[in-house]
Image 1 (cartoon, rainbow, N blue to C red):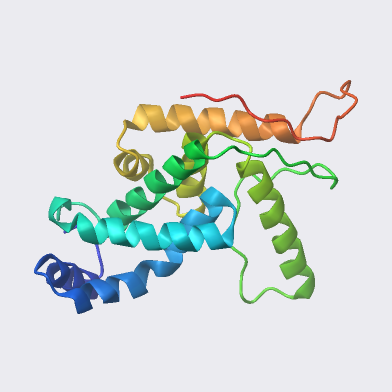
Image 2 (cartoon, rainbow, N blue to C red; image 1 turned 30 degrees about the vertical axis):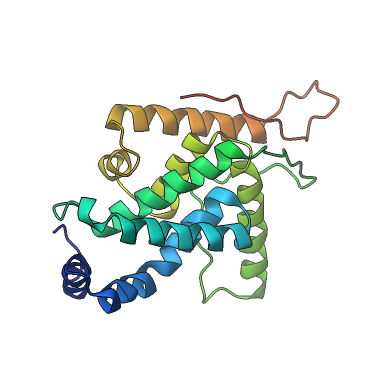
Length: 203
């Protein structure tokens, strides 16, 4: 089993042996990262909660397919991200616009619990802005950005999670950055220069 914490390895072994309590421990341990991933992908807390529950149910139903040489967290996040991508492909995306001054967020980060009021407000605004930007790029790009910058996963781990190659992941991340940059830097001659435009679908 990959570099999981000893207690996680114990719970995984128990779950693989049919211990529902052990799987419940895994759910409790990973519920926050799974929900956060679903939220960043879907942008709606209610839908994210539903997607997280579905991801755990799918993981439980497919435990016999889990490769113990892999990271359980990576496997679980791959189930979550793929389920969210399916949801996004089935629904019609609405394109949002913002009125704030243009800004660039090259490395989104989770809000620190120790931040002061002003910092918390700024982080909350940046998080909302980034969520709006993520909503406008293709699901495959969104998954790569979230896994790379929110979860600090390596190219190898992301490729494993999304069942593709490292070169494909690097290409998607490059195109995702281009798409986000184009949303933050619209053509100045446009009459709607500060309106974010939808990114083109891509592989």
